[in-house]
Image 1 (cartoon, one colour):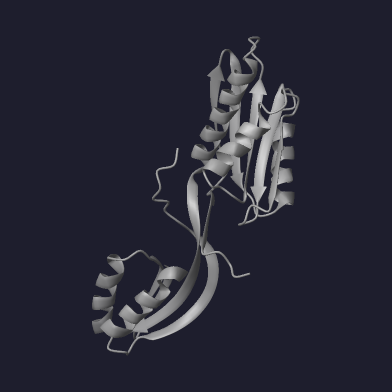
Image 2: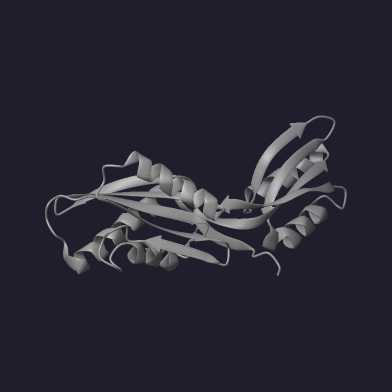
Length: 217
């Protein structure tokens, strides 16, 4: 199967908390590439909050969401782990894990209240961890002379790309990261504006974070 061109995930580990009817809910989110990484994250949060009433969690691993796990950790069935994983699914997030830690405040929330609380706990965790789109990206080293560099630099400032490094020697060598789905158009434009004189060398393929333009809630 060909690699997917993009997937949505969390950019970094983050956390936030809310108080609901005297119960404290702390949401933690993190990116992870394997189930082992997700479980290590869960165990670390459990160790940090050994005195908590519950450490409920969910994680989705694989660009095609091949692994999905969740746990209510003692809360009534379907009131904690399921709401957490539903937020991840609704936000189309993969390769990430969320733990929502609860310190009971003495007021029962009821099934509906728990679902709303853990839903909100997951939302604040993913917000704090920053949702990004990881797109299949290609890196190139592009060498041009100085007169061409002026035109190339102006062109690059007007497109979606990441200039990783510029080296100014006899010629200018710029290291450029572009989305795979935009490769043909960008490289053709560079060739055209340089009158075919640009030396373009591929320098690797990866999945890299790009801004997410969606307005998901």
